[in-house]
Structures are given as C-alpha cells and as structure tokens.
Image (tube, rainbow, N blue to C red):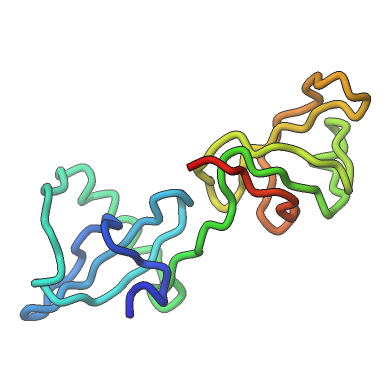
Length: 151
C-alpha cells in the first residue's frame, strides 16, 4: 500500500507520532530533496537503525509546525536519472539569459534533485562539445529524450 504512494522498502523516515503499535512516520524522498510524505505504519513493519539527534528533532518539530500534513501524503516518483538526455520545452528568462532556449538538449549531471529541479549541462550547438551552461532546470520545463543505459 505504501508503494502506491511512492514510499518504498528501505526508504528512511522519522517517527513523529505514536499511537499504540502504529507509528506516523515522516518519509524523505532519497533522491528528490525537499519531497516528503507522512504515513502511518505498523511498528512491526519498521526497522530502527538510529535515533535522531536533539538538533534533528528540533528541525523536524519546526517543519511539522509549518506543514499541512494532508498535502504531503505521497512521494514523487523520480523518472529522471543521471546522464539522461533532456530537451527544454519552455522559453524562460532564467534559461535564456545563459543562452539556453526552448528545444535545446542537455545532459542530467546528478542523480539527485533539489525541490524538483535537476542539474543539467547544455553544450553549444556548434558540435564542439563546449559547455554553454550548467543550470538547475525545473522538472516541468523539460522532457526526457533518452534514458541513460547505466546500471
């Protein structure tokens, strides 16, 4: 049932509430930083591997005080991988000021995302292979044109 919500085996989280043998866990996405979800699980379905520091608990408490849990019930499935080729599908000043325009292709350089943006390298279109720009590109601003064949 958790897998349908993007929460998979071995994903890490922090217990934020206990109700008998049920635990409410705040799960962090392992690849899309800033993406998180709350889920209730049975205590026997969880493996505890460490206890959070007091500082980590303070950060979690601060996040909880500012979060509407009903808006964080699932994790985003990451369909982008390192070395995938992508094509920009929008024309925005945040890209054009670096010479990157709609239709240009680039290569994803990191397997992780921050706030659903991906680090993409765009090369000059003259065939030289010279880097034009390295940009953080929002996921909704590109399509994947070719998946990397890396295992």
